[in-house]
Image 1 (cartoon, rainbow, N blue to C red):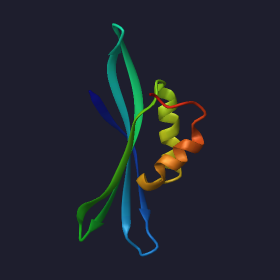
Image 2 (image 1 turned 135 degrees about the vertical axis):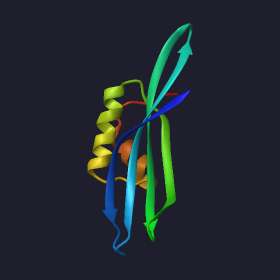
Image 3 (image 1 turned 90 degrees about the horizontal axis):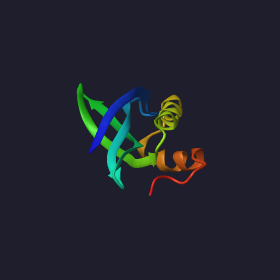
Image 4 (image 1 turned 90 degrees about the vertical axis):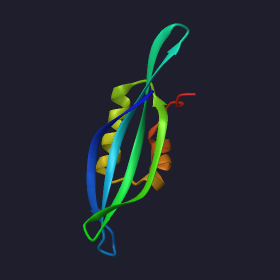
Length: 104
């Protein structure tokens, strides 16, 4: 079962003047492997925009199993937040940040 935790948000303005909201989530997946409980962590980014005060869903992307280290996942999320990374570029950015093989 995957549990989702909101780690941060970021509001940005497009060149056209539209305001978009980015939401960054830590995903926690708990499973069992050979009788022991293991947890792995992933990331999800949700991009939304408002139109006449109503929030409209735009896009989302996630990696369900990025690492077994919760602090490493949080560190990556904080870098994504500080650089306003969107769902469409998330995989490329994480690929550059990771120096280990993601969970199989």
